[in-house]
Amino acid sequence: MSNEWLREAGFETLAIREGLTPGFEQEHSDPIYATSSFVFESAEQAAATFSGERDGNTYSRFSNPTVFVFEKRLAALEGGQEGVATSSGMAAILTLCLTLLRAGDHVICSRNVFGSTVGLFNNILTKLDISVTFVALRELDDWRQAVTPNTKLFFCETPSNPLCEVGNIREIANIAHDLGALLAVDNCFCIPALQRPLSLGADVVMHSATKYLDGQGRVLGGALVGSEELMAEARGFVRVCGPSMSPFNAWIFSKGLETLQLRMDVHSQRAQALAEWLETHPDVKKVSIIAV
Ligand SMILES: Cc1ncc(COP(=O)(O)O)c(C=O)c1O
Image (cartoon, rainbow, N blue to C red; front, side):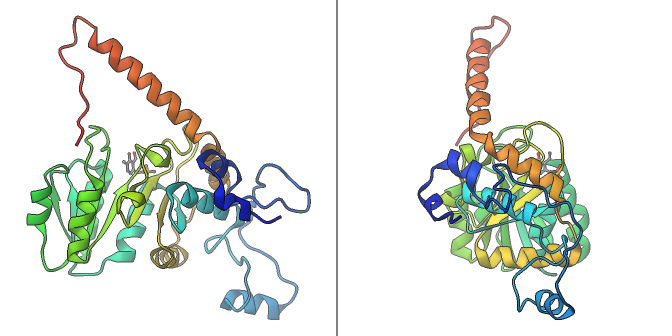
């Protein structure tokens, strides 16, 4: 069955249909390919598949059809060319950094990012001679002033966890691009039902799928979405270094994507109702969000 008609589809249809190609059983929900590796009709066919001369799966650290469905579906929802799934959100950030950076490079990162992200930049990447400067997310001059001749990557989390600080992705992307650097955005809190960083100029979107993409607290996972070229490099890193997503987790996340818009609509309505109720509460002085 051709999925060409999906090119015209809206978010909620893509969230259910993208990546699914019913097999022999005409299943309506994605099957789980719980397999470490794949079999071949002959040694010649195996050799051709492993060498890349022939399309096909060889080993689930390299590729897996269930993981592929999640990657394709998330990429469509983020408006990116391709996605690469990882075993956790932190594995996605590590993959991003080790794909794009080398010894001597410099990163500028917004200060209010998830704690383990700070740990990765400060304690792990520094061992590889990759340095980082933390700046205030909303102070654009701080981003400009932190630039060095070796700055390769701008990284921000917006809204940030846990303070929900919101930055201007378009402005930060402009500063990065004027320099020839890339901007990566951790979109864990807003997810593509509410914010699509690529459409605002970011080069890569990063997810802790563990949060809203699953939405029910069952499994860990992460993902990157971006251009074909960048994702090919990221996929190369995952293949060799091994922070791959398990097929079971990918299946859970693909199912999570199916209800993403509905869940985020309800989260947003309830957050609004709670904020309005708090505003009227005699013990509450002020209700505000930190916005641009
Ligand atoms: C904003 C943000 N980024 C990254 C991560 C790391 O994701 P994971 O726990 O899936 O490794 C988290 C986890 O809470 C997070 O909140």
